[in-house]
Image 1 (cartoon, rainbow, N blue to C red):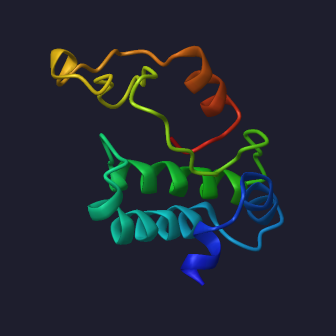
Image 2: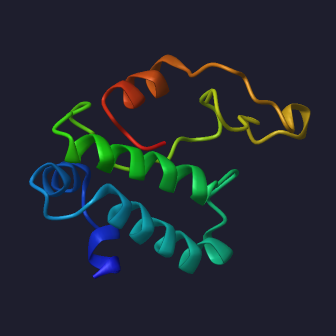
Amino acid sequence: MADDLAGLGLVDAAKAIRDGRITSLDLVNACLDRITTLEFDVQAWAHLDPEHARKQARDADGQRRTGRDIGPLHGVPIGVKDIFDTKDMPTEDGSVLHAGRTPGQDASCVAALRQAGAVI
């Protein structure tokens, strides 16, 4: 089932969470499992913090249980390329010149994703 969840498109994932068929934590864990399986060969992630993603997912699930909908992407995990500033994780632009850089604020597109409820 995890492979099925990790293969959901954005619209289907958001609808499944909204309809209560899956939780954000289920989806995040499925995506993390897929990353674990493929990352050695693909090397797509400059920074990955599974516990931070799981915390965001648990928070989204808690809000959903209380009836609070935080947007159209509520609880859907979204990966952000390392060239977009993220306030709570390194943004190194794929360069040793920016190694360890944490900008302290989100790029406007990342802020919009968060406001829509995405798990970053």
